[in-house]
Length: 629
Ligand code: ATP
Ligand code: MG
Image (cartoon, rainbow, N blue to C red; front, side, top):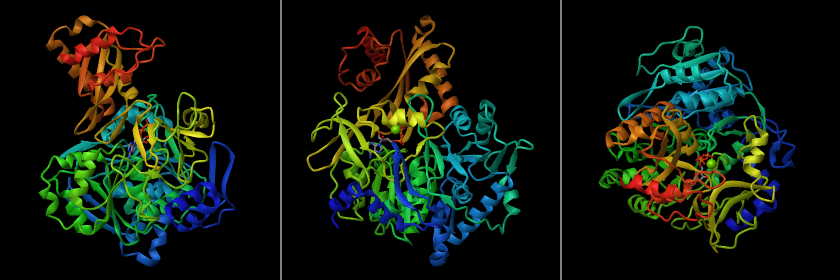
């Protein structure tokens, strides 16, 4: 079948199409209806069907490949490497599941996972899936305040964490941050389960904190049966960075997600049982959920969990892993490739990369220089793919499992099956002509695997995503894009304000809120400014309560350091602005909205754009003057 026909069927006859894809996973009880779209924009896939993510990822491979590698945990930080077969993984997941049950976790309960990239984090996710608990993984780089807001939203009965992670050879403590977050949060979890890696001394809170090694020892032979879940039961909540300051909890189902992953692993990532998949992301992000933990395992592949940087001990480390484990498919982000590009390419040449079939990149725009460079170095196709936490799997890419569609430099590809993409002119709500810029929207119902709702807030789901255009069955991605005459899309940035620092997505609002908590700050604007290495960095413009405090270079520098320290403490170092400038006025519209895009343009040396609604143009001169200093 040609991809064009494959795609058309997914749009014209979604039920027949997804009924076929659904046979890629095992069902305990067949579904009675493929799609229930009777209450738009909510969509229910595979209604009444019963299945389980953990069963499909682990148990179903025991019959054919129990002794084949399933999870390969590599840490270049602790110099450890351990391979778990599917049988080993099955045992570890049951030990974790039994331990969680012993701590009172029941079906439907939330379990928050705040962990470094260690095997136990994957065990914990799979154990939740096994017993029908809902996991919420919070990125380990987030500091106490971010963690606290997520604790309050998810209300977890149990938090699983570790003494520390490690980065660049230094221990990064987790436990003290977690303790502080629990203090800050209104909601208090009953239990905290700690993986003690022996990296950092820590204090356990009596009655609340439990050491995993001791608990696991009581459950070595645990047999924990799979809890069969209706397809539309909740599998997990994962928070986006959030432009409103309050993060959106993306809630996902069980059956639709399992089908979407099994299908995308076959049609887009071309993974086969027995092969090895290496995604360099983190379990705290959606790529970690879909393509480190669940996707590869559901496809019967071995998956690599990597703790470390791309350049330690040297920039050849990832390629040595590809050689050693005969990785066939690799998934990374443009920012990581830009880091590698700074190092001698010979490091790559030292390794036999003949197993590698393709490198997939996602998360931010892939510039042509980076793409061409890595393509030449590796000699394999570089496949850009565009998607969101909300969708869980690619919206745009090429589906080489269906047809050998060509890629195009600068484009993340064509519409993936199941996604009825429309580029919408924001002014009139109509579909754009080819090459005309508009908002990337998707006609509902969304395909399987996409978010069910905003956790605990259906109204926010409808209002945020489905109320941006006159046509109420259109999901907004909040990204600008164009489609060319051949159906290739190009992403032109986002309609909201989020910055991406070395692959970490941060809401400018969140950083602004953090800076505002400094006693001297009266107002602040944060923008993301293009950075060759990190993709973007945050730059802050601050209005002080008392402008006299920052009149000399020394006093400015001292305050700048203080502001940076506030962000470090509350959000983590990734959110720290690279510069803090002091002004007495910020560019705003007459309705009082910050003109972030204009500030950003000036910072990047571009034209400030349409200023018809600006309240006072001299505010822009202040920005320029501050930058010139
Ligand atoms: P929030 O929704 O809280 O603002 P976020 O959008 O930054 O957070 P993600 O869901 O991880 O968090 O990121 C998805 C966004 O990343 C897309 O909407 C798009 O802006 C960008 N993106 C992802 N992949 C690509 C790609 N291949 N090319 C261009 N942009 C991409
Ligand atoms: Mg987003």
